[in-house]
Length: 551
Image 1 (spheres, one colour):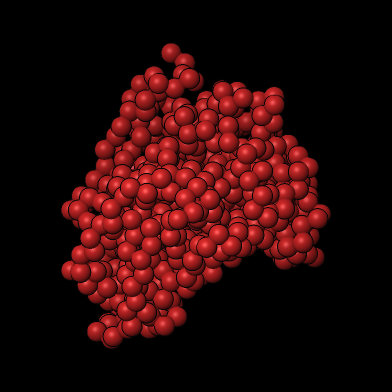
Image 2: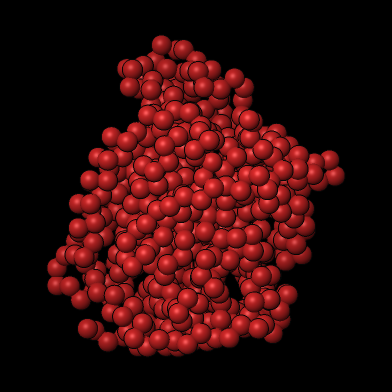
């Protein structure tokens, strides 16, 4: 095996991922425990990675002088979360809302406090796309160390407790061994590399947690899709409110009676059924509101971003450009955490889009926007603050786990294996195979068992290719590991979706069209047991929550 330099680093808290969740956790932990040594590793560049600097740049705002958390729960639990959520953590998020925004401003983030309504009980306020850079600057001022261009490949354990992680530099191949009392995963969701704004969610942190034995929850809800204009290739916000078929019939009224804040899976189902009946294409007959980025004229970085993002629409005939198709975004975020962002492995935490559905906060919807625009960035901030506070306390008394050198050697060999093969399969072929399985909405949004079974058979053929992945350089090596994570996420989706025999929230089954509270008010738990994917259910403790389903 080709020899790479090896480096060892030690810290109290290792944070994997330099997006808004990881950076927020670092600042929160350092403010609470200034003596804690904190290290962030980021496979690209901390402050530029993640999604917070690539999207609409809005923060969900609750008028807490008029709305108490119980009011929002009364709306969200039946309407959005479909009773599947952890109501305690959702109430905690709402209660912390205003304080979180105030804290961001204290850290140097500029918040445009002009409130814009987005749906029942919620508004958004604006933030520019340099939000992550501002928080990175704050973290560094507090003494947080950051190593860029280093990816984590596996987690190290001492028995059932976390001991650190291993990884490598994506430019020169240097192998790193990180000794840490506590590790935070802030690595983002699985987005299958389809939609450009979300495509940096590669699922590698999900895969590492799964391999280490952490439980996954709600993996079947990683199927977010939204409409895109087929010619301009641009996303459409709220376009599902104005859908017309080729006969110029309004088909929105087939699935909703009034305008809603964001897209639901029923819009995707309607598109599919209209197309199946030969009534396509589906077009939008009403001008759609501009993206949030264009609604906030003082955003120095947001406006050029949105201009570039929508440049494909220039010069297109409006009628031609009205046709839309659903595009898979994904947003699988299944790493299970409790209300303090602790995973099921001692010392391992997770925050942001790696664990949003795994927290149970949102209920029966994928990770943000989760039918609530503006919830993405602020939920990552929320999870980061909670995790940072919890880790700051944990490491005060925690004993460093022992690093197992046999484990390190095993993970090192596995990490570099694709570089050692003389020939093999390009990782992009694997990713393309998975996209062909997941992207059709009838496989991921509006499902039926016979279609899921076909997808599972196709995925078995893709799995057989994994031992033959070939990398010619360090960047291809990273893509190999991301391809493995893509296959794992697809596998979890198909197995959990097959298990849930009902329709609930964003999750729709053609063969089980009704919500079944008697049999399926349950969380599906996925876990790696001795290399085998296992699934079981847990009853949602609905009797302990304030909002109850109808009898």
